[in-house]
Image 1 (cartoon, helix red, strand yellow):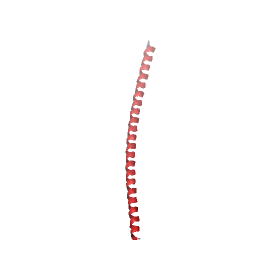
Image 2 (cartoon, helix red, strand yellow):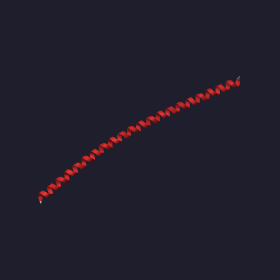
Image 3 (spheres, helix red, strand yellow):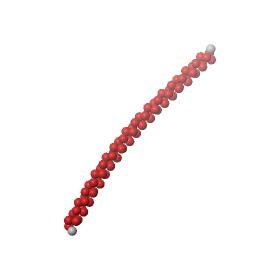
Image 4 (tube, helix red, strand yellow):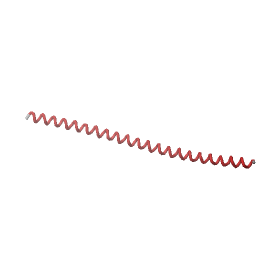
Length: 79
């Protein structure tokens, strides 16, 4: 009888340990998911910054072409 009670206590303790490990694993999973969401948000922000930079570059290239055209026209007017 005593052995059965001891085995029961051991089994309950193992079950509690397993439940604690499960809770720890779930917490780690939630932390990992939060880190993933943060990383995705950072990636999204970086992509938006890159699109903005590309737009600025496009505008700058257009301004440079316009300036070159004006220079060429002014140069040919003087001749």
